[in-house]
Amino acid sequence: MTFLQQLPIVFGALNVGFLQTLKLFGITLVGALPLGLIIAFGSMSRFRPLSIVTRFFVWIIRGTPLMIQLLIIFYFPSMALGQPIWGSGENGRFAASAAAFIINYACYFSEIYRGGIQSIPVGQLEAGQVLGMTRGQIFVRIMLLQVIKRIVPPVSNEIITLVKDTALARIIALQEIIWAGTAFLKGSQGISGQVWPLFFTALYYLVFSGALTLLFGWVEKRLDYFRG
Image (cartoon, rainbow, N blue to C red; front, side):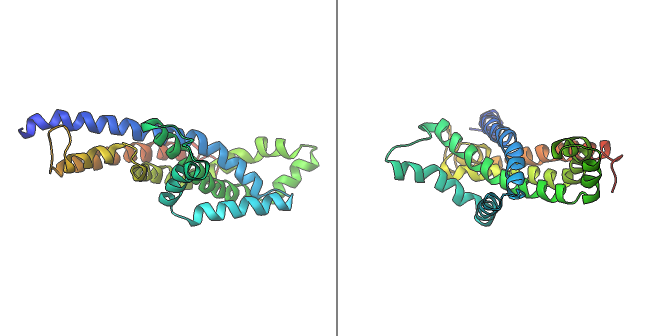
């Protein structure tokens, strides 16, 4: 099979793998961004037991490799209960991957949120209370846009890291884009021993990360009126 004959086969497989990567990326953000805010509020709670438990959980998640978390979340429930809870096949592996990524990134986002919220001068909170506003009203009307301005750079870094971290899902045999690329090394669809598909795999990541970098740069410029 010639190189030109291999091209459509390889790109077809990489496109399928990239769609799986993109799906995992999107679902992780949809779940982790709001969950991270909930965890942040838990870690800042005045109810000390809740704050301690939440911070301990975040410490565990941030202090252990995502790869190990993937393996534990995928295999441990089945071993403990004697039956799979994620379902079978590719859908089951995807569900386990999504759960692991959402929990992991929610904990990282929670620390970014917490830092952004606590960086707002306490005088603004006190001023809102003097005006008779509730803590919720103060957060939404006074603090929210300032917090967003401050957390956009670190959140954007985490999101770009997520693009590349999705490759870790292959540890539980999720067929994302790197799985598709390495398949041509081992033998897939009549092609074997070929390393060049991996260079195109890297190109997918590079283009996607570049697009996100431009997007977040635009967002930061739109928020420039909130300085300090």
